[in-house]
Image 1: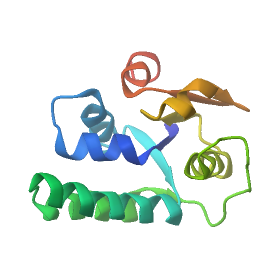
Image 2: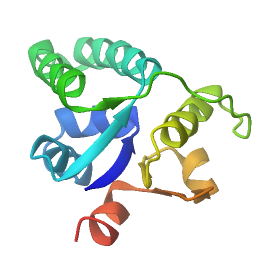
Image 3: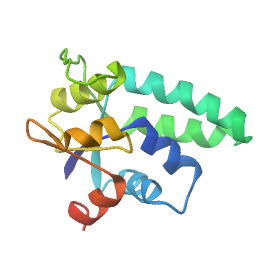
Length: 137
């Protein structure tokens, strides 16, 4: 099974917009075809963003709650994150740290700053589309 970190922007897109590549990435996780590495920091960020998006677009919050439950019960949570300071955005450093701590093979993101890095140590940083082509077949 491929170890991945799915960035919060992919979760937001995949949860609420069902026709895009992020949704198909989440389905791989839901169907236990990929392993997801997560951290309390990323979970907190996801919960905050879901509240904002749900209110802005009038989405049913129960849908997001189901995904949060799936994460809490099926993702591998890393107990601590190494301090990394290579990104301009501190939140991006947390994504890299989570991936490093959890020995992820991929970070799946739509964040341009992370995508520009392309690779950190042995971790490939890719879009949902590229991940689906390259890793998930």
